[in-house]
Length: 361
RNA sequence: GGCGACGUGGCCGAGUGGCUAGGCAAGGGUCUGCAAAACCCUGUACGCGGGUUCGAAUCCCGCCGUCGCCUCCA
Image (tube, rainbow, N blue to C red; front, side, top):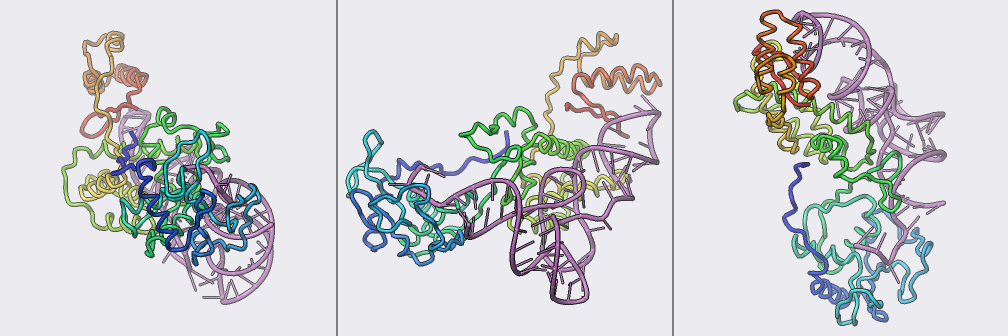
């Protein structure tokens, strides 16, 4: 419904245990990891640039503040690559005995397997910068000797009425629920219009706002749907692309779209041709995955309304046509009755120079 | 306590040394039989206090607030 594409690959940790064991073995061979009583730990201080991503200084970290450090560690900063099995837990056989992989190793191993030792972009929430991403870098780069990810893109947290959405406190709304309440494309626009790195406040008012804003785009699409394909305005597209290339400034890119919409509307109002602007807007919206075409289904039952008005038509189009006739006859009482009746069925009529147009709200 | 991110007009949100995005809402106007849609106009904002500068929302210092992280959770 949101128009998101599926990932090409959705690897599972449990299907990559062998690769993880191999990588852990490699780290031990290189002397940056050690086995201790069935566990295997990564020696953080052996990795020179540790803390670079999260800008942490090792000596500032107050480890063990909240949890007693495990006795098997040589250094409290060290993190687990492999944990000895505990009774009742799923476990796999390894050179260090039965156990399970540590949290971070799965990401390093699967990323390397499917993307290569050195890839372009690694994403994730800001809450994962430390320690997870920091540890991924350490173990990956120590194992391969190559730079892990070229760019890190961390998205901000999603808040609900001032508090972080949290499953454990029941303080959250599911995506599915939001899609029931609002136009899916309005939900998409809501997420799109805030820069990915910033925290985002989920609120009824903000979603309503996005929905109104989307209405402007939908109305524009309705108005220009008959426009034949033509060459897109280069200035608009260049400006749009410049924002997208600037650390994915989607909000800025959206402003380019809205400016083009206003310019195109003004031209159309003046009776001028705006095909190039329309084409540019359409192309930009497609890039953002904003599908603003109205549902075409004309499945609204208008028989009761038609009977009430004494009209022998059976479709919305028929009623709209009857209204046009009434208006031509200056029978505004009937015309308005038709419009109000349709409005009660969530259908809005827009009169244009080329005749009336209607859409479902 | 430490580290980091964020704090922009009524609201939401880009930007980031001079040229005042965009959206929503509001008020006024044009158009319309009335509406809807559209267009035009109006509102001069950057948490607080210092400092640098001809000039700061934008740089520096110090605060305050919100959120995140500081676990062998994923």
